[in-house]
Image (cartoon, rainbow, N blue to C red; front, top):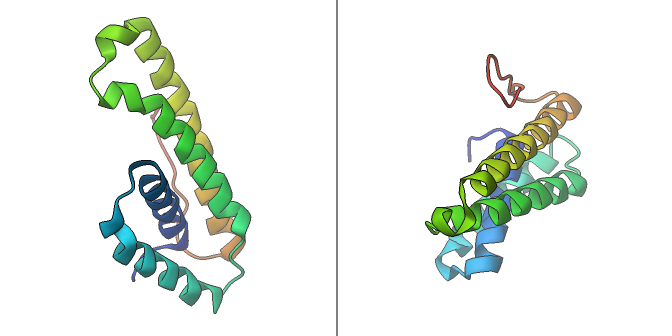
Length: 121
């Protein structure tokens, strides 16, 4: 699988959330592909379990904040709550990007994600 390690770990964390929260059994093939890709990276660099754990935690929080919005419950939440959640999601995305950039720095592989003129920079 040709993909930077930070992206694989990020996608794997989201995939694990999907499997756990919505029980999608057809995702096992994708899970295997990401797991194998990480094993290939482990032959070249140290892959820290904490990276995956941190991305999993951040993506889980984002999922929780987006859940009702994705279900079309904006009316129940109210615009103020939707806006509050949007700001919290933006802040969590900053942390997510920070973890991915840390992985890039520590492995010297790939490119940093740099936001310019963007609220999440």
